[in-house]
Length: 334
Image (cartoon, rainbow, N blue to C red; front, side, top):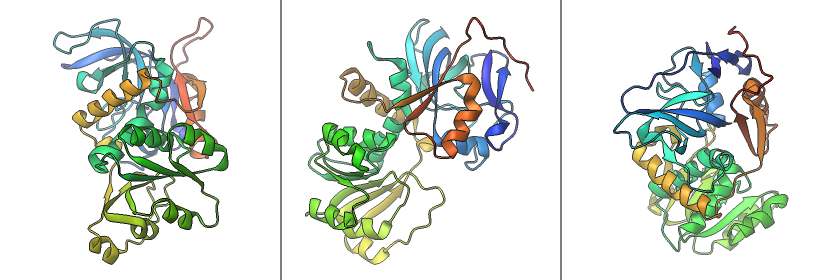
């Protein structure tokens, strides 16, 4: 089968494209014929070694996929021909998603709702699941609370707005001017241009009772401002900014019974991921969760995709379309 893979950790040019042996399903796994995979920042962390996780070479890259069940053993709950998706491959010893066929653990595989485009699902698989985990198991959001989303125009930020509104929260977001109307259309109560010289003052005015859940997708992690604006027992959820080292104002934090919690989707339990998938599927089927702008590329250009993402040249979500064309000749492994 054709796959995008690495044989050592390193830069994007370590990614190879070529033939690998077909995977063999182990107990509890389902063989999936992949139609599309996506490229996430966490994929670049695993490939480079910035995020340490067990890797067996040759290692197929990628986390998210959508496709069709090719074969499923009895007891997995799946049948051949079902449309499915997954967002947790390529980590903790699991081979990745960027291949023509992948063996997926059944408890990490979800049915694609009728009428949902697989490319829409895979474009949202990582950002929407991240948003769900930030808001629910970690942010403990409740209906009527105020949620602030910094970087609301991005993939995770937009999903946070939709999911927070779905949870009954009041949402205040920051974003670039070009995204303000779109986020209002998604249900945000107020959207502030992040370039506004008084953005902190405007956030304070928009949240007169304080902020219950503060989530910064822009990866700046200004905890001094966040804690200052929190309500009593407010929560800061940290989900980005691998190299940031912010100052934590411990006094104000504990005097208001507030908390700071960090999480990475890679650490999520299968139960948490399944709960996220159920909500994502429901909102996708209802047309309430809209995919970000997508940048389709062939699987053969996976190295270029990683490079573009690392250089900050991508707005939206890169999708790797999987499958041979009639004109394609499988390259040799190098």
